[in-house]
Length: 221
Image 1 (cartoon, rainbow, N blue to C red):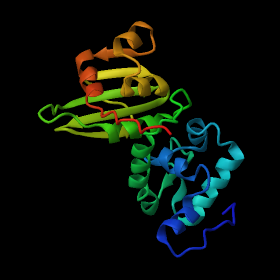
Image 2 (cartoon, rainbow, N blue to C red):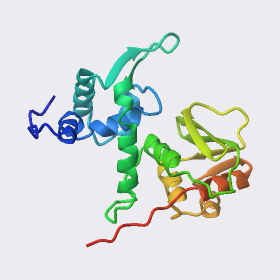
Image 3 (cartoon, helix red, strand yellow):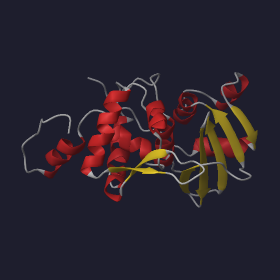
């Protein structure tokens, strides 16, 4: 590890922070939850990490057995990073941290947010009201980052890729989509301003947006 700092405790929580408490480590894990990424893709998701620091974090996570590097078969034949089984066990930790953090009164909602961060929030904040379960497939595209979102019987699944005949296809950027999710931007306004391009059934996308929980912000001191 880059840092030799340790809490020096037998407590499992303290030990876990010794392993993944360095800056950017958990965010690297977040960026790999939906599948492998090239170094350049990780840089795009974590632009403020810096290439040298990101390289160190990846190396440290490899040494810990949380991340591995492998070469894709032809025709891609590029090197990618992916989570190991143990690394993927950090997913519920990130989910709960995100839920807790979304109640913070100090969060800067205008700051950078990665495509994968938005998709993780989309999946974990999804919760249609009882009796409002629906089935639909969505293509959500943030530039080169493409996702397939499938809603089935009240549950939501996300994977990288392109949807075949989606009920609705949305082209926008991660920041705008996050604003739609939290309700600070209306869909009609986003469409009329050109921030969002929507094809397919608008009502299908409206139903998806209506199914997100919006946690109450904690009281500030």
